[in-house]
Length: 279
Image (cartoon, rainbow, N blue to C red; front, side, top):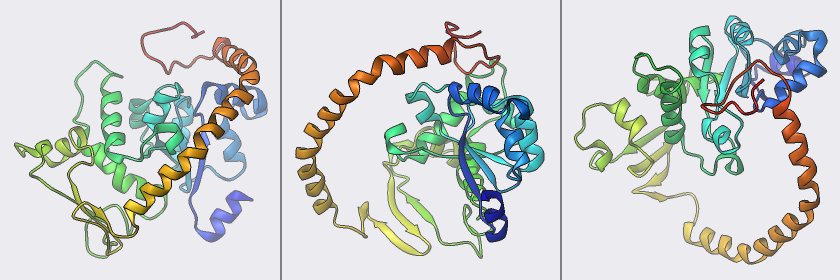
């Protein structure tokens, strides 16, 4: 039904696939008649095509990457979330070799703490760098392209978003080049990806509408929002502490299941240095 709806309405499909080692094991067990592969299963459902985007794809196999590349399906990588949640590191270089489409994301705030595409671009370059010791092509421009046109393509909107050109929506971020990140200025791509944090953003325009001007949000009352959040924290903190206490009874069982997941055989390695749980 999902594949049919996407086809009829010309919509992209986003789904979390192979974020965790547990999901890879589930695929091996629950989809054995599909070769233990989520991608084979989605292909049988008519979903493995140019509309499909899988979020995370940490535990995807090389054979599945080749399948996705051939179908023009893509992945949206969320490295900072994967690192924080100890899910592992997505195989960036294998995806590049396979020719897969790639977009960059942040996941939700509980998974990565921030919605910052500058961090996502830098993580893409850094993790690709530690995946292979041999010198390779510069990655800053590639990261910038994945974050803009690549992400727009995932939503089937690369004909109107992700670039500054005639006919595209006026989505712009204006940066202050007097910030130390650009002193001395020598490479837009490298400095934007490796040194920018969001600190130098002066203006933001979305579809021609100015939503940040001179570093101030124009669409909401920021001071009122901050006051509201502070007032809510008075009730949130004791509620959170109560929930933590109630859930404590389940923790030993969750840890036991976690240990079982990591001790089960799986011929994929998505962690660096330590091999404690790898089989």
